[in-house]
Image 1: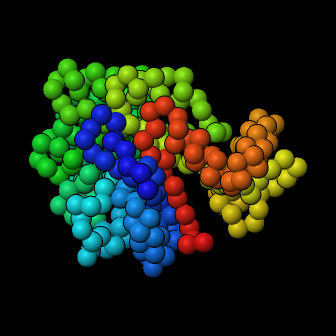
Image 2: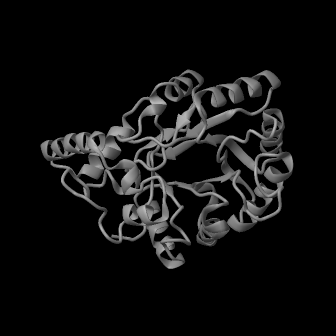
Image 3: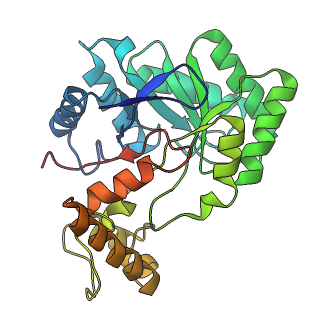
Length: 292
């Protein structure tokens, strides 16, 4: 495993990040432990979760696994923004919800600090000054080491960076966007912002939920039973068959299979390595449901 600096910080993370969204959902606790053990054995040190993943169960599983490990050797990232209950204040990026959210994440992770704390999505209902000043206090208190954003647009990210710098607040150091061979729209604005501001990019869904894994190719008419694409189609998730199957996708997959054959690698390896070499990318976030 190689290591890279997270943006222009001095924090070194493995060039692949292990995503924990499956933990507590498709993946039970023993299997989650095995996946994290295997990841660390391969040199990985970067694990990404969120409070909303399995409604806190993912964080709890990661926290239990951390016991007995050298905490300082593992980079833990989590997020705040989406609803964690029915109360109107248990959602968003208000000072109240961020502070209660970080305290709850610390309890579930059973740790004294979070390495990377990310806002999961833009909150149009809360003044950005309130969100950013609150995040700054978390860094100054030592509960959080670095800040990041996920699913921001170009103008949202630039506005947040400028506001933080103008007020002397800790700025966002990384961006977690959807980025893969089938979804490249962030190259228009977000990548230039990240390159200009020294922000590391940690893409989620680098294989687009399995579309770039090698399982799918031109001529297929429906998802493979039991796969994530099959689940996504039934649940209405973004990777659903009707959202992605089409000529634009088949053209990309045609080229992916040709490149894989030429290099003697799997389509998944080619898709991941393409992303690893894109400007500004620090560490794609890989996910798994089973050890195999």
